[in-house]
Image 1 (cartoon, rainbow, N blue to C red):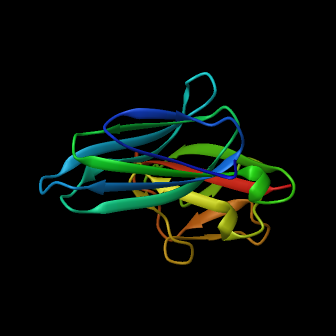
Image 2 (cartoon, rainbow, N blue to C red; image 1 turned 90 degrees about the vertical axis):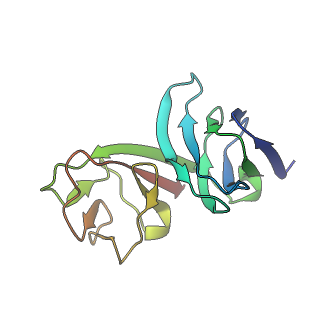
Length: 173
């Protein structure tokens, strides 16, 4: 099947049996703020990245898209009142070739503004997603730029001390 979807509220773990592009939508249907966490787990259940970890204000939403590998899982932990929609497009319908994703976990030190992609390089900012503290998605040109060879991310300011972020590199080969 090329398109699959899940709608639920509360806590749920969604497993993926193929590489896929995943669209995640959250909506708080209540007036009061509610806590939500979205995590990517590997096939053994080990945490790979926290995509979102925050309090979603009343009547507000959050949307993101990621690429997951065969065997990975998406774990959503949400208070009552949070509606979750997960749309899945199987890789064979996304692109010809193989899509790979690497998660590079980083922590700011208050001084450093350049971070390596650990020997990888990207051809375009479209192959990179940077999420700070599971809440804020960095914007290319506003928050960061790339080195000429695409192997280094240069933030416009030093990343705050102990601020955790993940650089998600998705490449087509």
